[in-house]
Length: 318
Length: 290
Image (cartoon, rainbow over all chains, first blue to last red; front, side):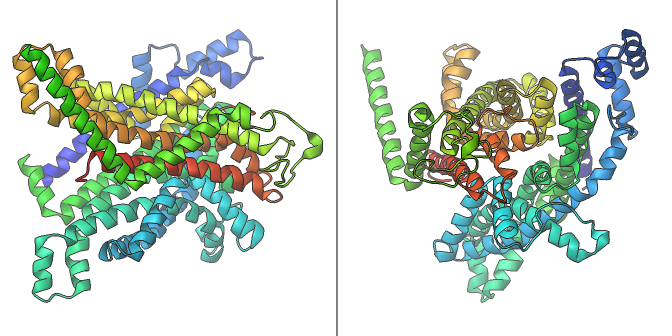
């Protein structure tokens, strides 16, 4: 297990290094001079020059990169060009709605998708299977932002049941928190649920075809016991992988949903930063989101090892 | 002479195989349905200048927010522009951006995947870079690139292509790894074929099928992300009628004009649905076991 752990960690570190080069590189593709952007077109050449000096923009690119990485490793992502605060504190202020939105969406998706996938696999080729297949195809083909607009029309404009704009923190009461998040969470969860239901159905159906399941059934093990003890446990890893892989879609989809529902999360921070060309903030949001994504996938990898002894052993010998 | 005969035999065998693929494609209703939907969608987009009742930029302040009627099938938007026309032209832009993204990222990804699957020294560099890129969700990478380069249609295409490239490279690499171990590759190598000939002449055609499936999915996904970028201010710049811009404009009048959201939305959903069904269909045809 330790060996497996070490391998995953080395892999994560190399990914982080490349990621940092890419993000740093993208920022330096930007046409124009950061000091000039910060000070505006009216500033004199001397002021711009002294700011350039102050920001360390006169050193060579590798030096700038090393300095940026060293700072980032200590949690210093630089200053926002336009908000008089460090990038990390701007991100800190906006991250909790994004996390709430993503986590609730993921939970709702799991709650719907796993039973749907299991029932579809159990009645393969039947009515339930067909309904689930149609649902997943719809979920994969209906972009979350488009689905959110339709939900706004139905629940906000016609039925007037739910608010269509704004956010209430969980500290202000669960009821209001969920009332405001209901539509955004539904929008995001649909596509996520579609991917998870698809993979659940196909892996559970595969496992149900295995000899040992037939043996268990022949021995008189009850249908649901087979499902929970054997089929679902063996289908766990592919489902987990899908959750890890699609979590990136969820996180980035969240930013669009936030823009639509006017939720003050990372997405909104991103939109205002794009409008003002506040590159350090854009860079910071991309970095933080990617790190969350990497961390989730590392957790998924480690969970494999915990759940499935085969992975641990393969990790040690390989 | 014997050469010619074997070439002929090979040709007829190939033709037979092609017929088999075609027949099983006809058997697969999914692939056919997807192909039919996409044919109609592409025709609508190509014929937009003929079909559209008005110009996509034509503003008529007196006709603001008219509901669907025989004159304006899709109604009009907040500036009195004919929505059917904007949707048809929007389809053109979205298909152009999505399609060129799918082609460019697949071509580049295929090349990198082939190289890294064949040369182990290239594998380390290329795959490490791809892994780093894949740690960033494609949409975020595209946003960062568009923000850096400036939002023009071309930059949106460029950014999306870069963002999707690693996905294709990974698929191409794993197929290359298995194909290069096949006996026929060994045979060609032992005849003294150059690496370029082996790689591009013999391995590449055999890794194409998973790539083609991937290309249709990227096509669908790029259309979605291009539209989503519009909501973040990083898409095809307005007032160009991309589907994303049409829907973004619709959001601000969603309380008074449902048709501006629903009708272009249905067109967009049918497009993505068509591509997904087509992708699933092609996958089933090419890999009957899977």
